[in-house]
Length: 470
Image 1 (tube, one colour):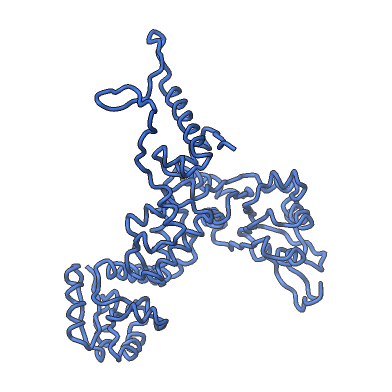
Image 2 (image 1 turned 60 degrees about the vertical axis):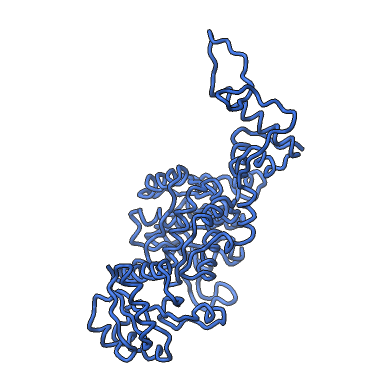
C-alpha cells in the first residue's frame, strides 16, 4: 500500500481520483490546493503527490517545493492529452501529466516511477553505478561470464561487436567489478576526434605546444590514473596514433605534447570496435603488433537479432531507466512486444532504446499497441508472421499415418537401423532449398512457404551454410 497526496479544488475530480486509489488498495490523503504544503509536511509517509490542474496548481507546486522538495509530483487534467499535443511543457519538478479519468495502468506506471524516484534519492549516488548488462540468452550469459573472469585482472580487453550492441556497457561493467572501481573510468571515442587532435586528447599538452594551447592540459590517460581508459572505435585510429598508443602499452609511459618529461601510466586499457581488425591488418590500416597488445582478452557482443528472446527484458529495463530519470513511463502490449521481437534491429540495442523512448513520448503512461509502432517494425511483423500453406496441386503428400499426411519414408534396413537426426536434418535442408528455388531466393516468401518466421529461416540458412539461388 502506497500513501498518495491528492490535491485539487474540484471536489468531484478529487473524489474520483481517491476512488481509483482506494480500488487499487492504496492510501489517499485528500486536500484542497490551499492546504497542500501543510498536509505534505504533516504526512512524511506520502510517497507521491497528484495535483489537479485547477488554476491554482502553480501555488500548489510552490508549496510542495518549499515543504517537501524531494516529493515526486504528477499533474492530472481531463484535457491532458490536448495539452501535450498543444506543446504545453510539463513544469519543472513535475514528473508527468496524467489523463482523467485515471486508468489503472496509467496510475500504476506513475506510482512505479515515483517509487523508483524515491529509491534513487535515498541511494545518493546511484547514478554512478555501471548500467546492467541485460539478457537471459546464452550469448549474453557467456559475455557476463567473461566479464567476471577478466574484471579483476589488469589484462587489456578488446570488445568486438556491431554498433549499438552495448560495448561501453560491457567496458563499464568490467571496470565496476575490478579492483580499480574506486578510480576514474574515462571513455574516449577515437573516431569522433580529428587525427591531429587525438594525441592531445589522449596524452595532454603543455602551454604553447601548438597554436591555441594557451595553458597546460591533462589528457585522458592522466585523468584515468589508477583507473580505466576506454578507447571506443579503436579501428578508426590513424596509423600515427597507433604507434604512439603501442609505445604506451609496451612501456607504460607517455609524454604530453610539447614535453619530454615521461609520465607513468597506471591505467587499464579497454578498447572496442565494430570493424573487422583482421581485415584492417591485411589492408594495412591497422598495426598487427597493436592488435596483439589489445587482443589479450577478446569479448564479442552478439547482435540483437541473434538473441530476440532478450528483447522483452531489454524493453522492461529501458522503461525502468526512463522512469528512474523522470522522463515518464509506458507499457507495451503482448502483440506489440511480439512485433518488436520479430524486427531485425540493424541498430541493435541503441535502436531499440530510441524506439522505446519515442513510445514513452507518444503514449505517456499508456499501453502501446502494434498500431503505435514505427511502420518498419509493423511491416517486419507482417512479413515474419507464419502462415498456413496449402501443398501445391499435384504434389505428393506422402503416406497417411493415423489420418495425418506424412513425408515419404526412406527405405530402411532395420537390421542396421537409421541415424534419425541426420536424416531429419537432410530432409529439412532439402525442403529449405526447394522453397528458395520456388521463390527465386526471396527469403521472406520462402519462410511463408515453410511456415517459419523470416528470422528463423535466416538463422537456419546460416547454420546449414545454404546459399540462396542466384
